[in-house]
Length: 197
View 1 (cartoon, rainbow, N blue to C red):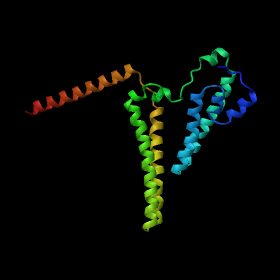
View 2: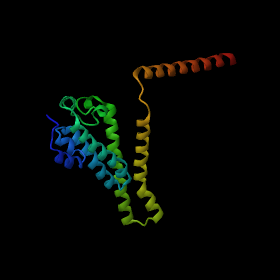
View 3: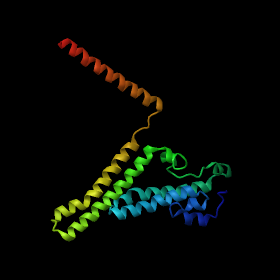
View 4: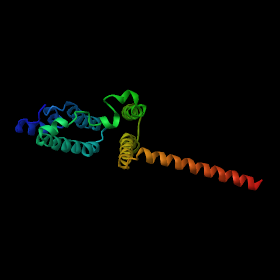
């Protein structure tokens, strides 16, 4: 696999997120970027949540565009060292450990459940409007509930991603500190009860 591709075709394909990576021979990266870009558009259209497009798509497009051109500028040795893997493989273990990761299965299931419930809610409200009279205010409020829920979930995820990851040693130290605090509190309660007696 070589990164010495035609400049014109590299420029053309880099304008479509993921296509540039595929042209360079990195198919997993290309598929994941293309899926993220067009999947975001489809999800935003489905949920009637256009802000999602303006929040995610420009980032994905710019990343893919500049990533493709950076790949082309690499030396043959640097390019040979690039591992072709899904862009979220390190976070969700898509390659091998997906079946062994119940935490990630639960997160993925929660996202699918959220999307399904949002769509069911919209369809139910659409049917209710057909058969029953709903005031405009109530209709507008019920129609925006899925968008509000999705916005809150995105906010929570963003805040969790912004937190600094902890090392295993730090996590163990925090757990030990919490256990020590709990023991001290329990001992203090027992002492107060003994004094009262």
